[in-house]
Length: 224
Ligand SMILES: Nc1ncnc2c1ncn2[C@@H]1O[C@H](COP(=O)(O)OP(=O)(O)O)[C@@H](O)[C@H]1O
Ligand SMILES: [Mg+2]
Image (tube, rainbow, N blue to C red):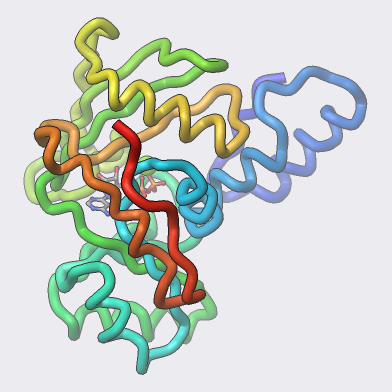
């Protein structure tokens, strides 16, 4: 069974996958792994378990914590994301403190939880997507957002360009495989920022993550 679950029917789709799984049908990705990948906060928590270079991410629910949270993510500007959402919907770039505050307050009033994330300015609108099957990258593409857009989702009008596998940066391939492993996904598309940046920018930001929300640190610097 190959699960293809639309963003608006996640829970229903997961129930169907779970049912097939319980009936002994081979499923490509298990329901629990799909559920983790659909939850941006849960996914980031899991990714901090590995020495992966992820943007500093803070979760808060309190307006009086906004300045502390912004200081942790090095903003403004900062990225605000709904916990659930795909195709770039629910991902916002807040350019000023005022914009961060009003966006967060609006979502909290609507009962929506958010994460605040470091804005990776050098890869604005550009990323690399690797398609992982099992423990191998089988395809990769560069995505470039349309003019004026910071999100590189194809659904938001970005242009894809194939990357021959022998030209894929081995660090991207390794990171994509590690990410799938920690998420327990057999087949997945892994998006990576900072595609054109040099080695020096491959520092870990995970170590500062989570401090604001839980007082705990993510892992430290990546092994090279
Ligand atoms: N921290 C960030 N810094 C810069 N750009 C980002 C950041 N997070 C997301 N983006 C941009 O927004 C797009 C959508 O974000 P993503 O978290 O992948 O949400 P979705 O699951 O909806 O695709 C990414 O492909 C990337 O272009
Ligand atoms: Mg994405």
